[in-house]
Image (tube, rainbow, N blue to C red; front, side):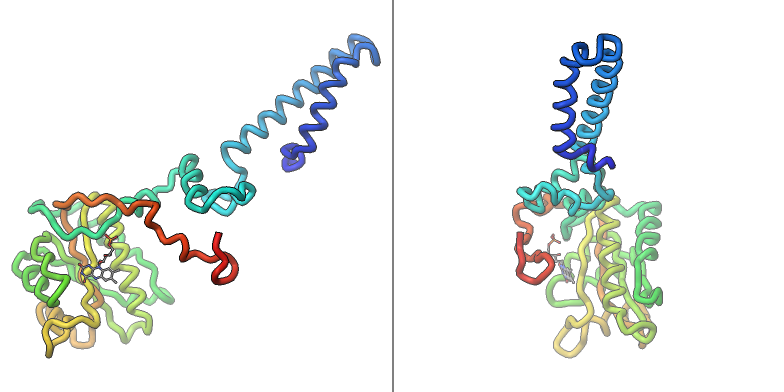
Length: 266
Ligand SMILES: Cc1cc2nc3c(=O)[nH]c(=O)nc-3n(C[C@H](O)[C@H](O)[C@H](O)COP(=O)(O)O)c2cc1C
């Protein structure tokens, strides 16, 4: 019913009714004309109100960007931008800020923030709820220094971080432990960003410490991990010492999005 009231046809009907109001005194006499006129004007206000509400809320599922498809001229990013004006998209705000941070100040991570990081990572989804992961929290400077040598490239900056969280798993518990630990690592990265901390993923699985030794073997020996455990990554965390703005919206690869069938772009 609301849909009809909001339709263009309703506007035409309303216009005709309003015009009729002028002729009502001649047609039905002054008193019934005043009564009918009041009803028509009141009804007009009601319709006007519905149209105003449509402008501001799009009458759609909360958060659904597709609900704006009645405005076909808009590109997806414009639709997201427009949706943002009316809704508080907290995760998107966070993602807009997120960057990999590799330089840290000396400031230690407060206990309360560490607790938030731990709770966040333990809330990670995992396949069949098997939770095959384990996390080793490392704050000892010397141990962090040793972990920073886990790879020939891409891990040395860890030496400057006050906190390293090593993300491991028992592959015997789940055949998709790589996915599970990757999600957990990402949640750590996002949660750190949310706490105003900088962080960066350091890949360990399938990387080399040197020509003979894999990074996983090296990290396992430093942390006394069980032999049947595997290491996915280390997340370096600390207060950022570098200014890194979020990625510009213009650089986003919208051409990687297809609709309904691969290759259908908007
Ligand atoms: C699976 C994965 C492995 C990564 N490994 C490393 C790494 O070993 N060392 C590093 O410095 N950054 C690493 N990164 C961070 C990426 O280099 C970084 O996300 C990418 O350059 C994009 O930069 P941004 O995160 O600031 O947008 C890794 C990221 C992912 C997702």
